[in-house]
Image (cartoon, rainbow, N blue to C red):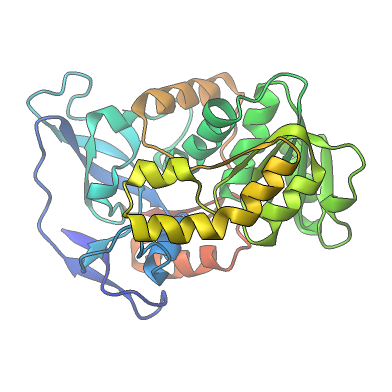
Length: 335
């Protein structure tokens, strides 16, 4: 089968190529999916650059992509929840990384039937970004009705999910975006929009119960300035916390480096009695089922910025890496 493979750490243009590789064999608790569509996420080019080398080294060549939507080709002998022909989507386990391929293996427990009102192209954009927003707002900060939340970069892949899900939970949503995307985030449900090209969220007079940091860098530390005493900050781009260190079972040397990097953020949190968590999302078929219900009920809408053919998959990742995508970037494997 054909698959887009990472050949080395480096830039997008020189470290990816389409190769012919064996079709993966299905394990007893797994399903083999004939890929219709897949999507890229920022983690894909971060891994390609080598940003996570300290946490996990890659054996090249290695597949790329974590989101898939397609049709079940074959099921493992212990799988009772799916059958050949089912339309499914999944955020595949890291050990199977590589959804930019004609066939993909996924754990049955990480998969779910696609929303009945979404196409494969739309469904492929849901898993990683949708689960990230879902887990950040429910599992980590436990966002409640009436609370005020600031969501950074509301027009991005995760941001478009987070705005809608926060509104579904009954929160009052403020988000940041550029001038051209103001109408988009308003349609998604944002109560207040901060145009970062003209104003700063640091000028907000009313502080927030929760901040969802999708940007990292200085934004992580600065976000504590607009967070209420005792508030909660969850980040998917900031410094890694001790819980995530334990989650990955990192060695003592790497743990010490990460603890040193996190000291300023943890000090800022402690100063106002706030909590800080870094979220590295987890695959979950049961939560994908919950997201499917929200799409089918009309509570969520899928935002696709661009869709590419498989032959242009490198162009798709390059476009995403520029940071200007509104919603998700999809690659259709089947023509």
